Image 1 (tube, rainbow, N blue to C red):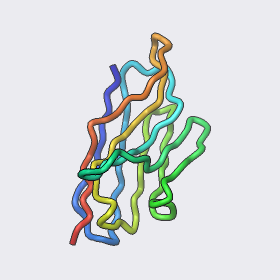
Image 2: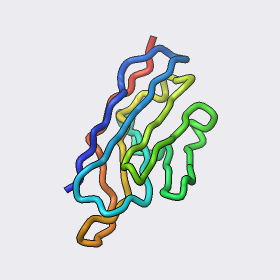
Image 3: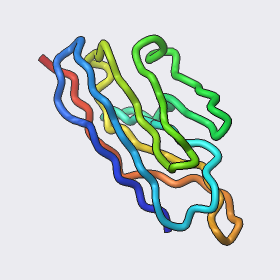
Length: 120
């Protein structure tokens, strides 16, 4: 099994900042990519940002220029710095990892999520 420790969510005013952190542990042989998705009430889960083991990043258009993903897949950690937050960024944010376990099975794992609420 793979476990995630996510932190950093909370309530922030529009224009404010938050930093999400995620650390994975457990049955991990190697991680190919880590990232963040989010799901707002009544909406589908959507990509926010991803970071590969080769340090390539990808962002949703809606967060480009405001959010920055960083971390080290070799250390099983990923962060999401969120600046200039907007009410529409309100959602549960999920950490995810695409990894190979010690049985050589490759699959996606998901954290339990952390709530981000942007409101005045």
